[in-house]
Length: 105
Image 1 (cartoon, rainbow, N blue to C red):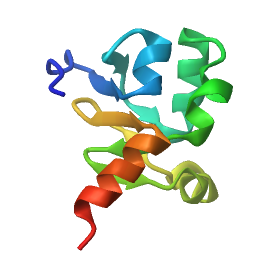
Image 2 (image 1 turned 120 degrees about the horizontal axis):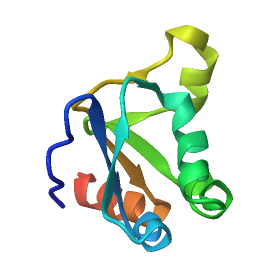
Image 3 (image 1 turned 90 degrees about the vertical axis):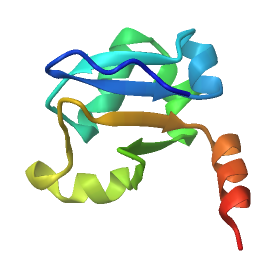
Image 4 (image 1 turned 45 degrees about the vertical axis):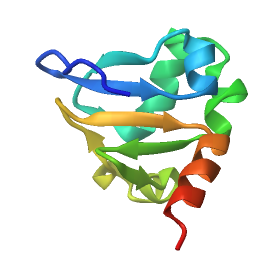
């Protein structure tokens, strides 16, 4: 999936599978900078119920790198901050399994 480039001062948020179904969108643009740990709260405000129904079982990537949200929480204020122009993706578990199978030796 290719999303349009984010407007200045924003980042692109890509949705896949159940996240696309829930939001009825393939992408959003959100203001940056944003600490990664604020992403779920922001999405819950935009799409009530999304945390419980979708996000709890999903992975998050920033610029194609998987983010360990628990590890980021342990870093406190030194945790990852999403920057303008970044590409963030919400990856549901079934898609994760497919991607893992494609990259397995």
